[in-house]
Length: 95
Image 1 (cartoon, rainbow, N blue to C red):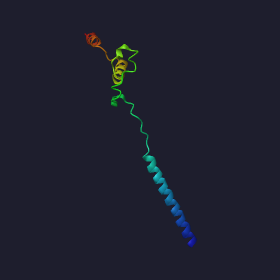
Image 2: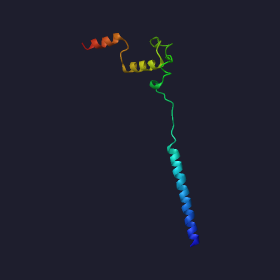
Image 3: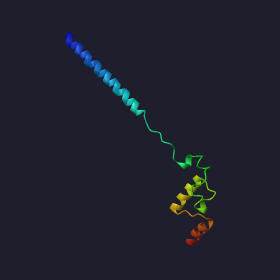
Image 4: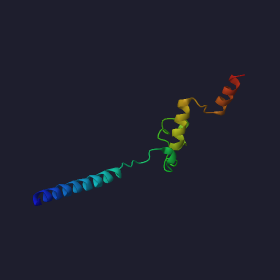
């Protein structure tokens, strides 16, 4: 009986220690996550102060900030009119 009781206590202890280590590892893994730098220009004050990277190549981007350049590229890609003349032409096109 003494041998069985000792074996039972040993197995119980090993099981409890294993369970404790498993829970601890799970909690540690759950709190571990990657934090990436924010690449969104809309949240960046620095991008609003830097000059456009294409300012020396594209004369339309001279004087624009990097943020304005990104907005301009987005507007051009969706066909948004760039000038007042283009806006008036689009308004008169339907008439």
